[in-house]
Amino acid sequence: MPERELRCEAAGTSMQPSLRNVLAGDRLSRLAAQGWVLDPSFGNHVRTFPADMPTGRASEQILRTLTEVYDADAAGLEIQTKWVADTPCPPRAGPSQNLAGSVNDTPAMRLTSVRTCSYAPPADTPQTAASSTELIALYGATVTAEIQRLRINATRRVYASFNAGIGYVQCTPETPPSAIYCEAQSAESWAPLATILTPERVARLHRAGYADPGRAPNYWKNYPVEKFNDATIASELLTILHEVYGYAGETKLKILTE
Image 1 (cartoon, rainbow, N blue to C red):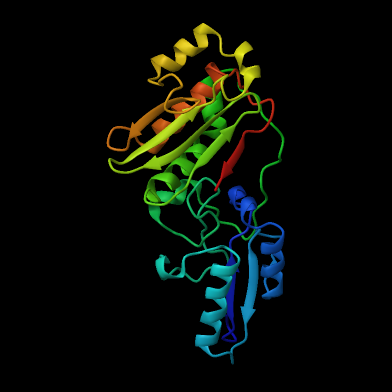
Image 2: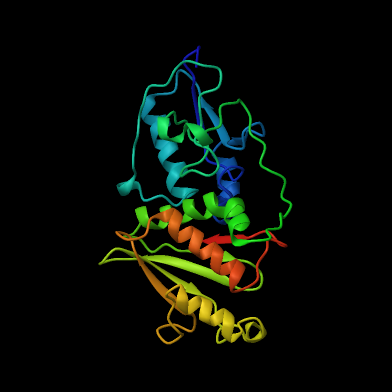
């Protein structure tokens, strides 16, 4: 900052709704106890270190926040640094992107970047979709980002579940060989689905390459990463939710992660 203070931001839930599974209860209390305050204009948590604080001490406190609040692996942190133009509002990675809300002026992300000094999340009201194409238009970017997160964390125990209220699909990475393993809920894991999963709808699952329950109580499929990109997998999962489970967006799609 102009007076040599160091202004820092810690990711919030406005642009990364999946962080609600992390920033809850005791974690939020720890964040506040360490001096971080929510900035309502953008949704990140902010802390300013005074100019006379030794750099090493500020670094220690930032690392403490990462490990105690965000449960980061201190030995495996990814560090990026980059010059950005001195503007009132530096560009941010948009809500559909990985690490949403972070300062990022990568040309490939400019179409969905946030370039204002504040961000208001869209209204939390469900939108209906009359077709799988419309459902993909509503949730495609969000689901694609979650599949991307699984792929780039393939060596870790991570998952994403997309719950429509009348059934779910869930995925986790597998390696080796590198693939995204996905399941579609069956009546064996939730009996009321027996009235929804008609033979015609189960046949639709089979045409998409899903195997019958056996390996797991759900229908399942492997998506090799060399054959399927993130957007293709996301589109197929949303198509299954629409055409197999009859999900049309009446309730907001609930996304659960580890």
